[in-house]
Length: 357
Ligand code: DNO
Image 1: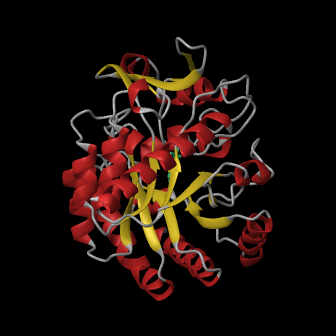
Image 2 (image 1 turned 30 degrees about the vertical axis):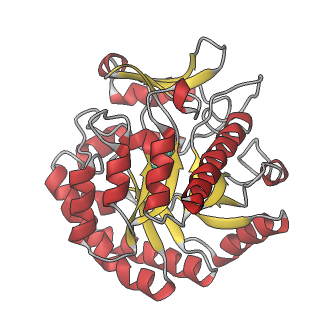
């Protein structure tokens, strides 16, 4: 595996490449052209400039998170082919630039959903949290305002103002899209992009829906082992793969995370590893990465990744806001650096215990 950190680019991120370079064991970043809208073709010059900036700082651009999918593709509307063509052109350019991993998601309207971005924990840190009753009490159009108020002046991925301005209209467009239709539209998209992925050896890595169930009545399909294996079979190509995000699949306590990892051998191209602390099955908060701070056994998650021979980029995921840092919620420097160090420690121990046995 290669330890990385997510980085939004010097225009948007409060964390610098120099700081990332100084976290022991972190050799790459996962980035994106943050200013681009879903459906837009990425300019080659912009891709190369991003890559160069990262390499000049002594790091590698280990993959893209995300090249977002235009809603027309998820809805299956008549103009989807044009947006798929644009997506293919972007992939082609990424491939030519030597980038081999692209994370994306297939969630309608909203990307990830949380009810709070700054819940206070007993140690005074603040974290993202989810409470189902709070979500049920909110109408989707209010969701953006409630999230935006807590963003610390940043723009959070998936909650861009342009996207939120269209929420009502989008709900209308999705009204005939159920789980089956969404699966069909995903298959259609994947079949069209696989040739360019084969040509440039680009691993597509779908991010799970977060939380792993339907919110606001919208369909959600990337939620459990059954569905993800269905997706892998439906387009049975190594380049059709997964971002294994423990914090997203883990929102559903019925998902056995190490077992899911083992069932996806050869198809996990990217890993997001973080812990959650459940207060009840419908209320959780994003704890520190350490097993003892939350509900998951992080050692077992890392061991499963080791056992399947996982070689892709991995990153600590949302960190707590600690030590008075002001940053994008979940994406500060300090707690993610602690997370990376802890995950690297687990990996070293697992690796050495295997070699010694
Ligand atoms: C949130 C992230 C998601 C993720 C996308 C992938 O912090 O995990 O926004 O990047 O769903 O496309």
